[in-house]
Image (cartoon, rainbow, N blue to C red; front, side, top):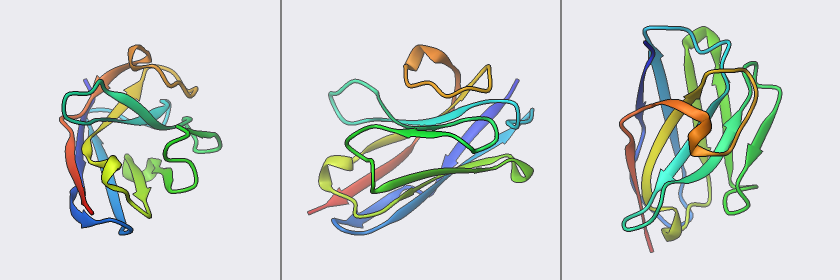
Length: 124
């Protein structure tokens, strides 16, 4: 059973940057698509970015496209989310998720393994 642990969240001013990490243990992520989702207070969890098993294909939500970059290092069993030009609207708990198969997806139901989340707060 794979366990995912996110880190790298924190408090940052608008316009700043953060890099989130998601380290997997208990299994390899190399054969799996991965994704980041986020959930703001009183809102539903929403898709942010996804990457295929080898990192050759990525997809982003319109709200983060051009500002966020998802990447992975399979040798380190880790997925990253580089977040630049952060806005107060990006404030949320960010979750890492693993899919059972190699190919990217954007729906919550497509991902069966989730981390506990890391808080990102962007002040104006």
